[in-house]
Image (cartoon, rainbow, N blue to C red; front, side):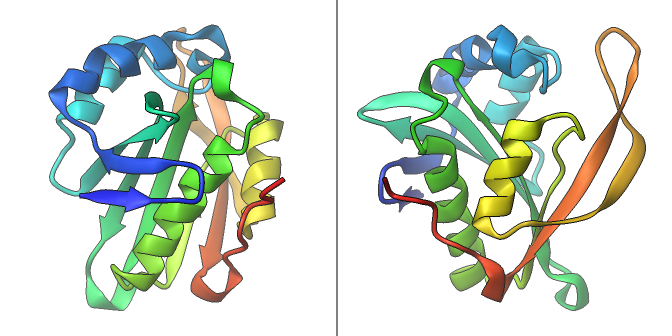
Amino acid sequence: MVIEGSRVRLRRAVRADAERFRELLGHPEVARWWGEADQEAVEACDPPEDVHSYAIEYAGAVVGLLQSCEETTPEYRSAGLDIAVHAEWHGRGIGGDALHTLARHLIEVAGHHRLTIDPAVDNEGAIRLYRRLGFRPVGIMRQYERRPDGTLRDGLLMDLLAGELVAPDRS
């Protein structure tokens, strides 16, 4: 499956993407927010049944990874998102376009009414981006994530309802 955005192209991740994912997840600017690069890269290329992994392509290159996890129970139909863009491509609108593209697909095609995303509370750049797309803070998840060094980090749960999705700035 391929989903076209205004700047990016999302396609299902394949095993051949593992090395590129390892490289982008291992970059210090990205690794501080993600887990162990080798493990995450392998899992992204062979995700569990309820997770969909996409390679983010821009100008013919794989520049990021985007994942969704869908709750398909009719009463709770929703999806969670997670994204990583290689640090060399930060600040170019790629992450915003990728998230908006998949969010629009999950709402309009898959029929989800609510999306969530859960950045670390101190990931200010990501939180600013998610707010611009229409996500709103729901609450702090205390000691949400165990880091590779054993420390615990809080997460910010954010959600977006179908009618709240805002297109990213195209400038």
